[in-house]
Image (cartoon, rainbow, N blue to C red; front, side, top):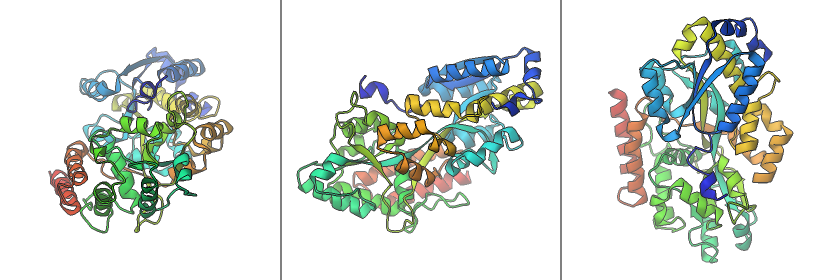
Length: 439
């Protein structure tokens, strides 16, 4: 199978006995009403398998429907607005503020059967499901941007270890370039697509920066906050050091992945779940040579921070308001987003071992099968676990995120093309954010 067939935009995606007790499996069955679950068309076989296990364990039936990722959000919003019979649905962290403000999701803070799983979850995952101090779901998939390197190209250039700072990225890239091992050693996907905000967030965070402060106000134009220095570093990488191709402004994430898999670059930033495809000999000629390293740090950074994101199970207000529907929805969310009737995080483990999708559940990191998976596809799990522990959620997720992101994308592109200074571009981002927040 080709790399194209296996690695599309997130489409490769992304209860315990207590939940089958007095709060209601019998009550739900008595109603004769199935649990309505809506998802996008990813991991269909794994989801169907787990639905069968849920139905067998609880006696409850599930109506499962899915839509293609490209049409999912529009389809779901249409159904929510039309008050269609929906109980549980998959939600992207980027939609949370909008869905919560519109009253399309119910908070779960008062549901102890679900909240107990926070104790096992990575902090960025839980934080990504919180809006205005209320939590709205349980995650099934949590990922982060990883810095990766090609072991063969570093060896040819006489480099013993991957870079730990962005200054070292420049130094090592220049050595690789001057040695004739790669024309553009650092491969970045800087085209305007849905991934750009994660790429840029990872770089800003790794430079010790933020886009917004704790009050949600724009700080991306503040010279001490990282976005300005990140923009300058990228401009220099493209136009001064020439270690990043000027064509990166038109390079999508999927095209960058093909180039990395073909061994055309020494360094890159990729979603962690892509490591499986990059190290699969049937999909990439550089398989076995692509390894993760901690995200390089900027001069103001105190840790190798990166950007993380999640997908989660949410409950509709209609389901929560009805006693029987609530009982079924809680059982379903626990069985799928928490532990199932075997006392295990079965679905999360299955999504990793079958599809390569990382998880938020920290105890699974010690599972033998999980360690074996990362050993096979990433050379080990230590870096993956350490990087996940320092991941941060996107700090620009707000009800107006989509509109702001259009301005942000254009501003970043103006820097990549040397048509605007880093200061002018980040000021434009900050001005738009303040305008939208005020409005």
